[in-house]
Length: 238
Image (tube, rainbow, N blue to C red; front, side, top):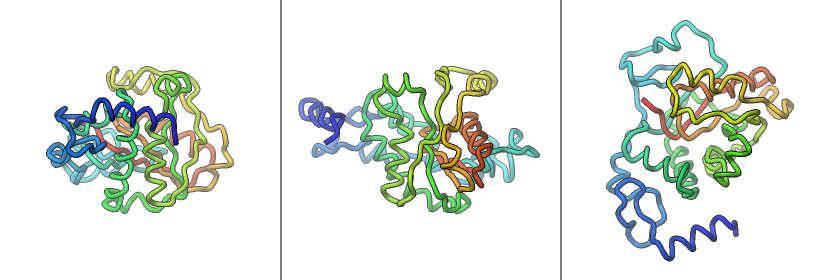
């Protein structure tokens, strides 16, 4: 058994798990991220939104100002939920509090919502957004890879890690929109181009903010010969 799972079970025995949002004890020793009440407050991403980046801040059909009449390496972005309320707490629990089983649960939920987005087509591989190796060592895992592997287990779509992060960047949430684009520029590289040549790919991440990280990954994948690149996140920031 994974040592992280042993550690999680040990902690759950002495400190029973609580809802990541309302902090109430989860009934019956459940290890899920949210209680049923908070889970009912999750807000799925639904139209109207930008057909390319799924931005819901402009409630009109078609493309948002940022995407209109522009070409992108990442053909489209979709997400299971809006990044607000209990979803914010859920992501925080597996991104900063070590509750990596909550990421697996999020990945399984992403599978259930995938069917709502037929425009994602049927990818040949899933590619998680990479962390810099120092940040991954600090955290103990890459949450995007856990999401991807949970999706893979449910769908049979294989997960590959052809992209590496060439430098440690500041967390995107700390920066304004302009600084986020500069922060991520040149931060990714495809280490194994043969893995992506001619393939349809969906890039997986936990949260899409501006979409700059997803576009940067997609750009490198397309340069390495990927036939099509889309992205699917657990949550979309608004």
